[in-house]
Image (cartoon, rainbow, N blue to C red; front, side):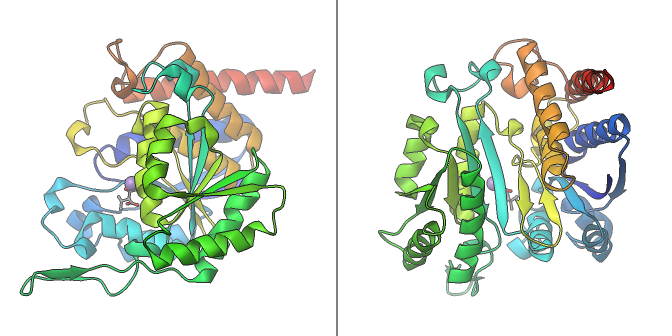
Length: 365
Ligand code: IPM
Ligand code: MN
């Protein structure tokens, strides 16, 4: 298996967690005899500092020429005063648009070993396994017009969706649900917004092609509450761009930390992989960052871009194993002693090597 991976580590804790993720991918390649190549590129604040642009052309070219793009995180307080289109985050939005992936998959899983790390009671989070499908290229993030007029003190953003944009992301949600627990919960604000009424009507229409999948609609405000009250009721949760941004951070509470959440964006020319967490500049360089979100993102590369499902599972199981053995980074330690970013990466690496060795030994028999 050959795979060209563009690595855009970005800002803050991005480089340190991405290092652990790529080292896991290198291990999988080595153990399985695969040919993975890694090309680094600049994005976000570091790219602004070094080139003046949050997404330099060279980075975009590298990304477009790859089979998968692995991102770290973007964002740096240094640039807080800049308008949105000049900030590090603009680089991320531009690359999302250029790669064309419109379905952002964000799994939120409750790890038994971390049940004490969640502020929710263990009986609430037990066995939770939600897959958010967040529309990534439409809505308020990209709608025009958008401006802030400082003279008139007026500003505008536009929430806009076409039926085609809703249909394509809804199809992905239904396809994925068909392979899981066969339920899609579509999130909107159809009691107030026309965009949501179009969303709801379109999703209802798409559902007719998937009779084996149950569809329910939830208003975003009550959904925010249901996710905390009864997270086990949800399988695939389909949302527009901003609602998915908000609800997926909220779902980090189920897992115990935002640092645990991976994501994959599919449907475009090149898939884009990024942990859900941000650049966390306050802890950058301290060894406190949790690399598991990035490592689980690497597992999603194996699943969605390399078609190596067994290896993807092996990485996920290695993460389970290390957590079950009691190892914790600071964000999930809850008073226990914690280990560093690098130590966590190394432990997952060891657990992975053991399980792949075992698989190969079993094949050889
Ligand atoms: C995310 C992030 C981004 C988003 C930011 C950094 C632009 O919060 O991936 O969830 O809002 O999409
Ligand atoms: Mn977010």
